Amino acid sequence: MSPRSISSAATLLLALLGFAATAAQADDKSPVLVGFIIAQSGSPFAVTDPGRVATIAAQAVNDQGGINGRKLVVEICDTKGQPAASLACARRLADKGAITLIGGRSANGVDKILRAKNMAAWFPMGSDPSDVRNPLSFITALNGAGAAQGTYLGAKRFGAKRAVYVSMLGNTIYQNTAKFGYAQAGVTDVTIIEVPPSTTDFAPYIAKIKELHPDVWGGMLYPPEQQTLLVEAAAQQGLTIPFVSSNNVIEDATIAALSKAPFANSLALEKGEDAKRFPTWAEYERQLARYDPHHDVKGPTDGTTTTDWLAVWTFAQIARKLPVVTVDSFRDYVSRDKNFTTDVLHPIDFTAVAPVDGMPRQENIWAFAGHVQNGHEVVDDPVPYSAWQKTAVKPWTAQQIAEATGK
Image (tube, rainbow, N blue to C red; front, side, top):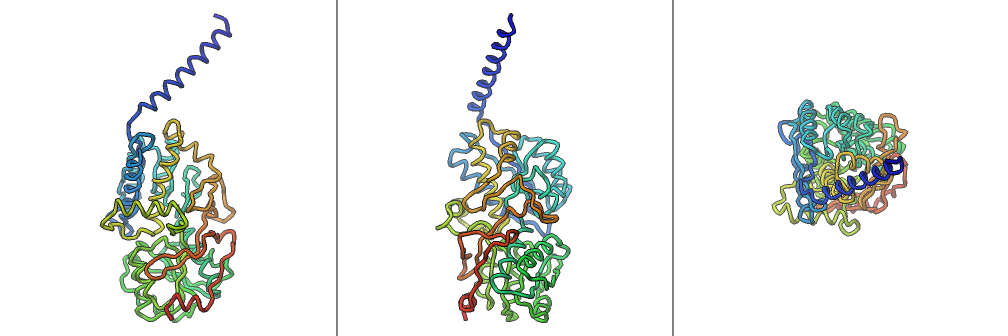
């Protein structure tokens, strides 16, 4: 057989193999598995809402035809707050054939599995530097970044010169990013007040804030119940200093407390929480109404909750575009994405490395200026801003502050 004949035969064979693979994919009705790693129990920081909304998103995807006819399965692995369990969860889910992992933290060893399997982590927790430096972690929202966005917005909005930031004891990631946001707004006089986990009496901390006489105060405590107690204590003690934060740690009860409080509030909103302006947010609200009729999701606008819903929802949209849904095809697709976007997120370049010390890729994260009023989060401006880029934030007038406090 001539070389040309051999070459032609090889080409034909490859074409047939490709056709066979495509046909096999078309006939493959096995579920598409996504792993979800989170502490749902056994820890002061355990939360259930993210798992609930991830399941809701999967239900909606499947009711809309699944992944090109294949069922989407989101398998939740509860770490119970144990770092070693995160690694075990990642290993078990990867061995079961998960296409990607949602949640989890590289610092807890998840990155070892990602490297071994050359696997993408889709929307990991993102608060730890090991996550934001991991090229296999594809991050769209970061709790640490939310701290910076909230302080930047609040300082600009209220013209602050002095600030107090309330944080969980030892949470240097939030503290440093919060101070970064303030510094970007020209505020360097920032006092950090640390609160031990499981604190229920916030009166001494509010008294300390009063003694310091800052222009603004606020912070981010976790889980969201802690944030609610903090706001309620401030209101009970008659604090009138404007409160600034992000909606990363806000449940419905926090929104109710802020609505009744005697102080103005300013929030960095992660995902354009406005169904009239943003179709993706409207879809989220439709799914909650259909699949969560008893309102088991306590913090539907909490940043962690909405991030995990969006993780499953966007995974499905990407997977539907892939001829074959595999670990490799999904990772390769997102690895090349220099303009990931939805209508509720500023375009994100997953290949970018930000020039911010210790916070690479966080400068991708933008936010919407907002506040809480009358039991709802309000988007004040549909144009997102960034603490990293020092983009413009419209300051509030005295009249707006008065209206926000009901005075």
